[in-house]
Image 1 (cartoon, rainbow, N blue to C red):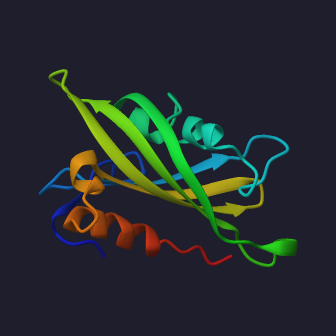
Image 2: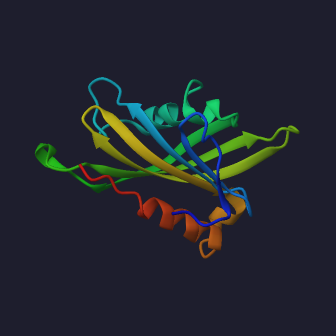
Image 3: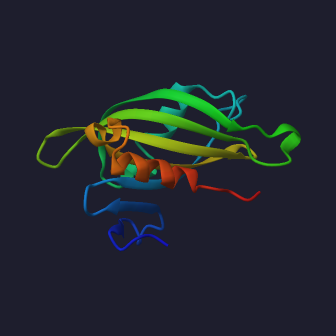
Length: 154
């Protein structure tokens, strides 16, 4: 269960998106098909960014305007040979949003992803770039704790 400060944004559409009302941190649970011929271990960082910020995807449909994005790093956290479990991979993303009044806001996100058959399930949580980049900030700790808690039991 989330703290009271986290508000669910898209309850009517059935999506899973929350915002921390104190500071604007966001959380998204996303699903996407893997590109043909790839696995979570081999899919490129560019493809992951394109899947997350797809103009027809959940983030765009929520009204969030993303001006640009880059997947800065990727790390396999657990491998799953012979499909006996789920491979887990973490991505660090830099992106910029545009507010309703036209201001550009730099954001940072961590994404944990699991592969289940030919789909990936992702939990993305993001924060203001300045606060996220401060290594000992409360916002950075919250983002890391949220992605660390994402587990799929397959």
